[in-house]
Structures are given as C-alpha cells and as structure tokens.
Image (cartoon, rainbow, N blue to C red):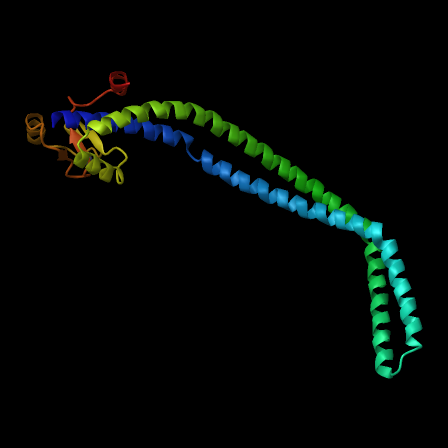
Length: 247
Ligand SMILES: [Zn+2]
C-alpha cells in the first residue's frame, strides 16, 4: 500500500502538470470558434449585398427587352379586344393590359432609382468588406496563436500522458476510481500534508493522525474537511524526478 500511495502522489503531480497545460490554452479555442462564426456571418452579409448588385445589373441589362416584350404583348391584346364575344372577355383583356402597364411603370421606377440604389449598395458593401477583413485578420491571429500553443502543448502533454498511463497501470483500480471521483470536486485530489495541514484546504491535521499515517502505510487517509486523499510530506514527489524515473 505504501507503494500505492507513492504512485498516487506521482499521479497527482502529473495531473497538476496536465491541468496547467490545459489552463494555458484557456479561452483561446472558444475565441477562435466565436471569430469563425463572426467571419461566416460577415461573409453572408456581403454576399447578400453582392447579390442585390447583380440583380440590379441584370435588371438594367434586360430592361429594354422586358419592356419591348410587354409592349408587344399589349398590342396583341389590344387587337384581340376587337374580336371578343362578350363583356366578360373584354374586361379580362382590359385587366391584363392594365397589369402590363403597371409592370412597365414599376420597371421604369426601378430603373430610375437604380443609380441611387447602386451607390447605396456599393457603400454598404465597402463597409461590410472592411468589417469582414477585420474579423478575418483577428481570426487568423487567434488561429495562429492556438496552433503555436497547441503544438508545444501536444508534445509536452504526450510525455506526461505516457507516464500517467504507466502509473495508472500499476495503481490499484479501487484507489484510481476513488482518486478520479474526488477529482470531480478538486483538481488536486491527492495532496501532501504540509506544516501539519492539508495542503488542499489548509485545515489542520492532528499530529497524532500524521504519526498514525506514517506507521500505517497500508491505509488510505482523506482530509476530514475537504475529502482529498492525504499523504505525508515524506511521500511527496518532485515532477522532474517522476518524469526522469518513468520516461
Ligand atoms: Zn483538506
């Protein structure tokens, strides 16, 4: 059991390193995700404006033909109107002609205001593209930061994880399960006693109990205040030594 406590202390030291590495990445992955979604939104905004400009171009390009078709159709209808058999047919054609006239009026109106509308759209697009470029730059910077950090991190993490695996393999399953259970509440689930106190919550440990721990190496002790697994300071381990011993 003494060996188990020793293994647990080493595991705790490794996990402290892994937690630290994890914290260093901090909010960076979330920031990158947020910027990615921002860039996506800005791209969509600009695409809508570009589409409106294209529609405007199309309107101008086809207006002449559209108007001519409408006039031809109206003339055909006007001729038909002389050959109708009843008032109902006459009224139907009148309505159709009215509709064509309205369409042409609306087309004229759209052409008349196309210049102003185009100018507005181009201004909007210029603004949208500035905002988009800004977001893209920010995203690129954050992505690079994350990539740089992750690269170093992955190498370091791999080393720690390798040693962790070896420790876990040697550790008794029930102890490991208990350790992982406590890890849900305290990232440092197994701590040394320092100056007669739990180094997790700083509550005092009676010296009689510490003596007992030193004589009963086969028993797992936990802090009565915080529930962390305790080990006496002579069991404490230095991370460099652990890495050297197990790598
Ligand atoms: Zn404690």
